[in-house]
Amino acid sequence: MSSHAHGESGHASVGFYWMIGAVLAALTALEVAAYYMELGALEIPLLLGLSVAKFVLVVMFFMHLKFDSKIFTGLFVSGLVLAVFMVGALMALYHWVPTLGM
Image (cartoon, rainbow, N blue to C red):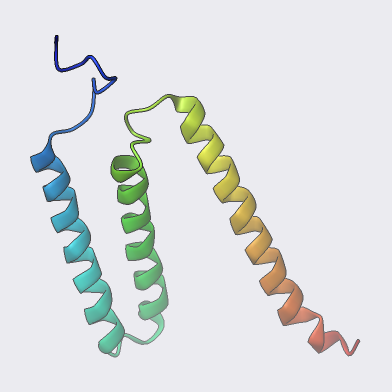
């Protein structure tokens, strides 16, 4: 029986996952360092960028979306877009409605 018998074709090696874990740990260390440094207006965009990079790595490799059908990626991304839209709408609602005097 070949090693591809259980649908494992196209997946990365164990060493590659360790490398992704090391990159995630390094990005987390950068996030912690950025939080404790006084970066002013650069702090929030930097932290958001690092968080997005970690999110993409986790989704692509540990959730195996990079190796699965593009349909699964599309379903995941569409749900993510809907969630981001809803959170943004709620943040805007709670930011502007109190200022309208209602």
